[in-house]
Image 1 (cartoon, rainbow, N blue to C red):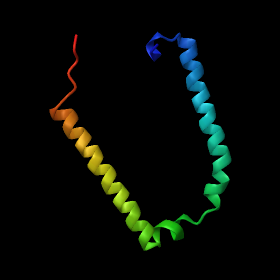
Image 2 (cartoon, one colour):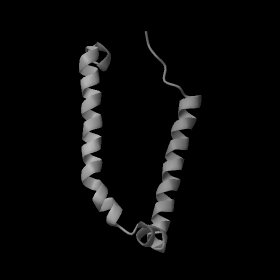
Image 3 (cartoon, one colour):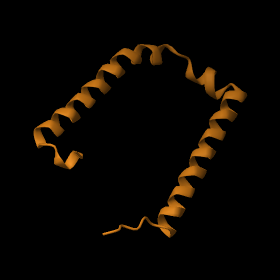
Image 4 (cartoon, helix red, strand yellow):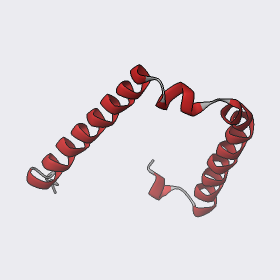
Length: 79
């Protein structure tokens, strides 16, 4: 069964559950996030800053490869 075969009320219920879970997660995590000194931990620390830059470059590279293959080698639908 795919999501298009579900009744609309169940789809809305699942979306509402996901939104409620996100709100509860943010409610519990926000005090921890707010109490940290992020600038000293990530921006002023040269090792952490370089790791963040490498992660961003890897993300851009993988996204670019995906976009390239989606553009030039699209998925063919078989009927």
